[in-house]
Image 1 (cartoon, rainbow, N blue to C red):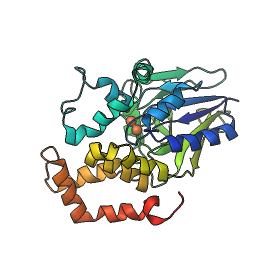
Image 2: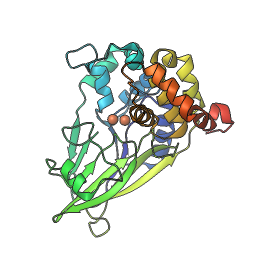
Image 3: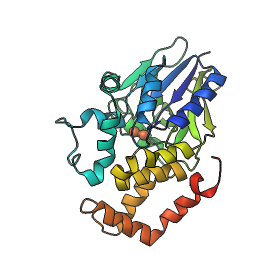
Amino acid sequence: MIRIAIIADIHGNYPALEAVVAEIERQQPDYVVLNGDMINGTPMSSDVLDYVRSQDWIVIRGNHEFYYLDFDTERARPGFNDQERWGQLHWLMDQISVEQGHFMAMLPDERIFYLPNTQPISIAHGVSGQNTVGFSHRLTDDEIAERLEYVPQRTVVSAHTHIQIDRHAEVDGRMWHIINPGSVGLPLNRNIQAQFAIIESVDETVTKGGWRVEHFGVDYDRRPLLDAYKTSGMLAIGGVISTLFMWEVCTAEPEIIHFFRWSSQNNLDTNESLVQSFRAYVDATNRDQYVNEHNPLLNGSRY
Ligand SMILES: [Fe+2]
Ligand SMILES: [Fe+2]
């Protein structure tokens, strides 16, 4: 029997990572795999990178590592220079050392495990070859099959959507097992706990595909992280985008998607003025009040 802890989407949330590591130490898995998006979104990316580099983990790169790696190159997204939209990335560039950057530069984008007496597992932040293709509970089996058209492995560990998934899909006699450990640092399933998974090789009669999944959620104190948004200077430079990421720490809901969806439904051009659109959003929805009710710095809760 082989047990592998899968963690992903830490997004610079060092206190959440510490809590997950404590639980992993209790669980004593054989291996730990980190499936991408270590950095960006919350203010402690450098601490996360230092910790990850000190560990004997299998580390895979996610799309947020590419924000750092693509900055100031010909691969950069159009608009990276736009301070209002990408100020957070400008702030992040100053936080990360050359050596930390080299570490991310040389990570693999996917791994395939061929462990004895188990089904092969494909592990990528999205799916093999595409780091922003993810899985949600809403997808049909056909849509899952479409995303995995070029993936020969039947057991697929993904991440990126920040949602815990343990799902079998079957189309025309082909079967897949989709596993997402959820997010350590920015969960989006309305559960503010730091989340991860442990997968365990079992007989195929126990679980189709031969990997049993246990999902975990760990309480941690979010207050030092929320404080750091201000004390690190991230919020001042990152503006609306950093505010929305901070809101996600408070609510564990997709605040960034909520905002951009509302803006487009109300015909507001966020490229024209992000700040004005955000003001209109807050005025119309009072979302800030909802978030404040979920903010442990304001509502007196420990977690
Ligand atoms: Fe992510
Ligand atoms: Fe991602």
